[in-house]
Image (cartoon, rainbow, N blue to C red; front, side, top):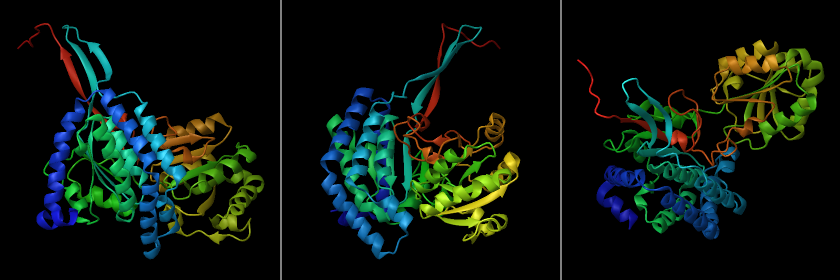
Length: 428
């Protein structure tokens, strides 16, 4: 049926139809009450649990294609689902249902000398287009978050995760149907044709209000270059960990290993390790040994290679590479100033961490580095909306306009002003 429809109308017509349906659904969602939205979310979570066998079967199809296409290990890691991870997806939807509904929240209120009472109130953005690669869980996270914030969404997942995303999307639609909300509120582009992405970037005749890309550098670059609507940019996660001379060595070993090795394929994984030259003799080798014990390849600066054997020399390219693999680049720096200079030169402004007991060093790190997320004595892998108490996230926005950091329900709203008067007129 789908193939016949595509033959009859083509990709452009299909996308235009989806855009119009989303626009109509967005109005219904903008006035839907919290009870209806939460009922839909709870029903989605239940449907996902019930469909675990079907989702796993669909995921096996995607993984088989990934193997045939020779995709990288980090890509396969992001693509792979298990019963545990699917249950976590359902739990994530439930946690979104438990969040406070942002729509209608009064952000600020004040009264003018002339008696006018002004309120700034959260409102939905409208229709959101989400373009993502290989992560089927984003289908659920993005759909649920957009719904909670009163937005309709058009999801375009990666071609390699299409079967998994379709299985998850079917559960989301079931939840919408249960709550009596329009099924077009969460739509998944049913084809892998790249022309669908181009249509979304064009705005679908004004029906898409904002685009959220989640993927590699090439995807984000294309979105930023071609989009004719606002973009919440999610650039690569070139994350740094700086070990200050005041850092506790035992804690530093533990945090650095977790930041790099917990999951190497996520955007919050550490890619560069910087160590204060003042503690090279005491901290450097134990930390590198801990990483190597976990199977991590070290690409080191020349001064480190003179101190520790068995390492690979880092090239200029390594300092600006998001490995998403068991590889980390390591350099010695001249204290907090050297760390800040290195990070400000190479960072993608995603997430950086400082391991230190010196409060002055921490304060300077926080003040002089302008990344979306900064951590003190904690793993960069906490760069996640769920860990921030947001329920889930669509991605980590690294730009400076509107949303920045984890994009959760509040970041998926705009605002309007409500002005109450008693007959005031403005004098000439």
